[in-house]
Image (cartoon, rainbow, N blue to C red; front, side, top):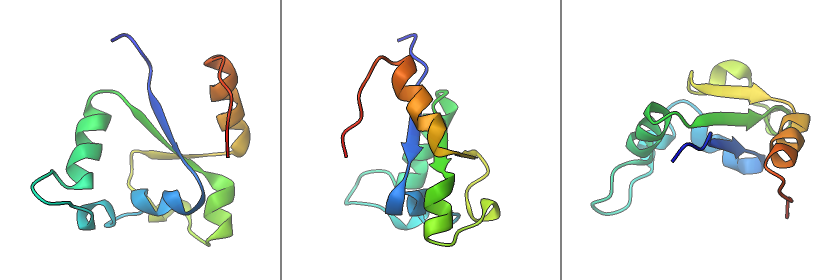
Length: 89
């Protein structure tokens, strides 16, 4: 579709990209979350993890799957501004 896609994980959502966690998440006959994430990354989607959220729940850079990039909160602001979007919490 010609779109650069990024998934930005923050808060407790960062635990999804912690090593070993995505394999544990599977519903019914659907693929596991790890399989879906692998397909997503293969398709070119970037996975970003909020550094401040890591500090909040005491997770380090080495705790995450290798393709997940740890970034500061300003990165989320930049992504939203580039997309001409707004954020709701």
